Amino acid sequence: MAHAFKATIVEVRAVAPDHVELLLESPELSQAIPGQFCHVLTPGMLRRPISFSRIDAQRHQVGLLFQVVGSGTAWLAQRAVGESLDVMGPLGRGYEPPVDGRPWLLVGGGVGIPPLFAALERWGAGRRQPIQVVLGARRGDYLIMQDDFRALGVTPVLTTDDGSLGQRGTVIPAVIEWMVRQPESEVMACGPTPMLAALASAVPASAGPVQLALEQRMGCGIGACLACVVPAQPVGPEGPRYRRVCTEGPVFRREELVF
Ligand SMILES: Cc1cc2nc3c(=O)[nH]c(=O)nc-3n(C[C@H](O)[C@H](O)[C@H](O)COP(=O)(O)OP(=O)(O)OC[C@H]3O[C@@H](n4cnc5c(N)ncnc54)[C@H](O)[C@@H]3O)c2cc1C
Ligand code: FES
Image (cartoon, rainbow, N blue to C red; front, side, top):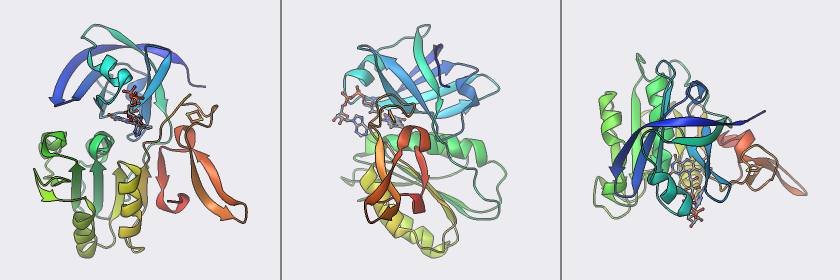
């Protein structure tokens, strides 16, 4: 059963306009699997789900990298080193490790980029198969963590909606280009639902597992309130089955979802 506890902030980094990364010290959170999330209490007794941007089990540290979009994230962005956060986690179903012997494509959109960095950091070292990272954002200065990927030896393909950095448009043309060259690749992605829906259709059936992490709005984060449900397979005469993103996701296999 998930419980709330305190985690101390050991570093605060301004990583881009409106984007802050907090490093927390917490033996419990540092047991996370990439793709899982932390439910952080903000004033008004509401919690906000944030993915782990880095997970360091040896140093007992995790990163939370978020964009300021409203009151909860604005409050989080004003926190200082030495303060502690009331957290629950690690929560949800994370990514399954990549399959040996297949090329690996990681696709992140906006604040969906951090969990993919955590995945590459965890599972990327020593793989002999090719790895491709495609990152997309609305504008160039929102393309977070590029240098972190480069530090792991992977040069990301960059795309922006406004063309201010990298290829103009969505991540999808770069995904298709890669899949034509490496049709057996397995895919991990996180980002806005329209991006994941487009990706789910663009990746051919020849691919390995396609794992998609959803950024659904949440309430309780532990399976009780049903605020986070999404339509899922199987779709019967009565309609689709609904699944809770907080406990049955946020990572789902492509074939489990209905877009
Ligand atoms: C599993 C999971 C992992 C997440 N990981 C991250 C992360 O690593 N970094 C990050 O920046 N954000 C992440 N998010 C989104 C983050 O939870 C929201 O941005 C945050 O809760 C907004 O809180 P707020 O009080 O600042 O904004 P609010 O005042 O609650 O909302 C401000 C605006 O943001 C929109 N919004 C709020 N939540 C979401 C959401 N989940 N999806 C789309 N739009 C939303 C609202 O509709 C509104 O327009 C994640 C969400 C989920 C479900
Ligand atoms: S957020 Fe309450 S059931 Fe998922």
